[in-house]
Image (cartoon, rainbow, N blue to C red; front, side):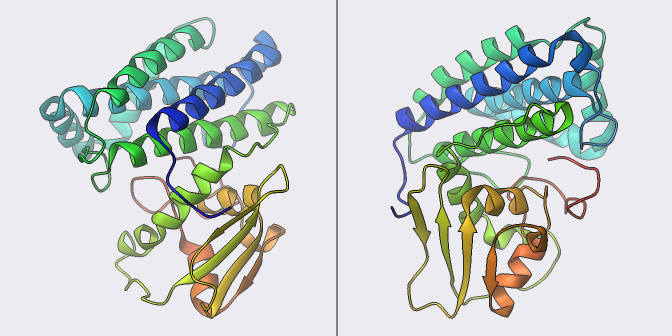
Length: 266
């Protein structure tokens, strides 16, 4: 299969499924698992859910009140660490992860996505996005933090073909890793040939491209979510541009993320 754009309805169905998969991980972890530290520095499982809730609330504001979101973004830019801390403080006062609150925000977010023009632009913490790209970014972040939770608790997080959306976002965000590092964006294309968890192929980029990345879709997504170094995955990377992309690529908004293998989180 090629990297074609899904419909908003299909994408939101997959976002809902990803959210439920992560919520199920938290349920399985139980109370002993809520305080387990995760790969994100200073965050336990409860904090991961709080972060996802706050991020979804920001997306809801961006869709329903662009001016209000612009004010929030300006405030966050003045004190990024404080903005993140204030968002987590309320959840940390709760005795359990506020999964119900996260689900409730997700339901409102679905309605908001279906109510905006598909060809519009939505402000975000990085570049503005199409509604489809913002919904994909929410799925990406849900999956990435679910991976953190599954890794921390030892429960794992079985990959699904929903990663095709994440892989597509990673390809579209190729230039972003260069821009935030003030580096020139290569003009040559890179061919990406991935194997989805079901075994189905996923392909992006022209077949004549000199550079290529091939291998498991989960590995490609983990690299661009800054969770793994490509050298530690099953990816085959051919060419200098492809190699550079795998070393600095980042598909979440914000400044350059920490090197893979260290603590940090989008």
